[in-house]
Length: 316
Ligand SMILES: [Fe+2]
Ligand SMILES: [Fe+2]
Image 1 (tube, helix red, strand yellow):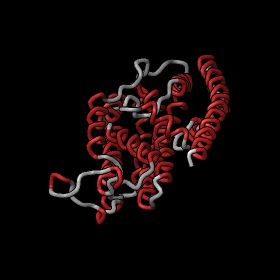
Image 2 (cartoon, rainbow, N blue to C red; image 1 turned 180 degrees about the horizontal axis):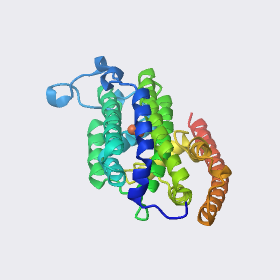
Image 3 (cartoon, rainbow, N blue to C red; image 1 turned 90 degrees about the horizontal axis):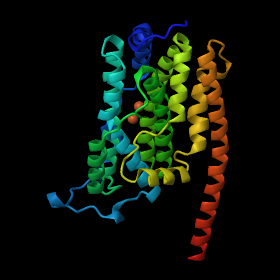
Image 4 (cartoon, rainbow, N blue to C red; image 1 turned 30 degrees about the horizontal axis):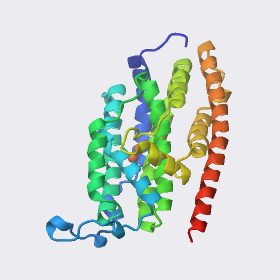
């Protein structure tokens, strides 16, 4: 196909694929309930109801686990912003509309269950958490100015769902609590199913309009930021999470970017025109640079961790 398709034409063409994948999703999704994942018997009143105020000594979570939990939860809290992006760029009609509603409802469970867990177990300061939520949701999240349209959005959410899956799963591991681990595995399994829906739709977009789709994918990957950008302490917490292997550049490359590109068969396709070929070459160069950056980051991280270990030894 040589002619550019409009947003509306793409959505109309892909509607049967959306319906098929919506049905697949509904048949695969587990109807789980947040209350089943929270240790309610650990709960007790806070000071205003005559109980005990939060105190840092009550938390069993390490500093790294706290940071990862708060970052993941605030990201999930910002669902209204993500809903707005998706609903503005997908159709409200038919299977598209049903998907947007269903996806939003499923995502809402993630913030419900994580917040309930953190408040009941007193894992983090509930006042600081609530203040951070107010700031983050008030700011909202806007897609970068140069983004727009269905293809870029569906490409972004494909990578983003897989990225949150990795981040939730690794956060579960650092919590050192089987209940938190089970809860975050449950959330991560949802993110994986979401990723499969978006990956399938973006893949169908590649088959329909290869050049337009690869250009959108390359733009998204070369400008990728994790969801949650702009939340309080975003950069510092991101560095801590990368340093401790919750979400780092190698994971981004090897567990998120590469498997998706492979699924779309990006480097073996022969349906690109000159524009698509050019975008694919740009992507190739971008991935090579990322591989070099991974090595650089890990060398830096190793040095930093060695310094910290030496300091800790010296202070014993
Ligand atoms: Fe989520
Ligand atoms: Fe998700």
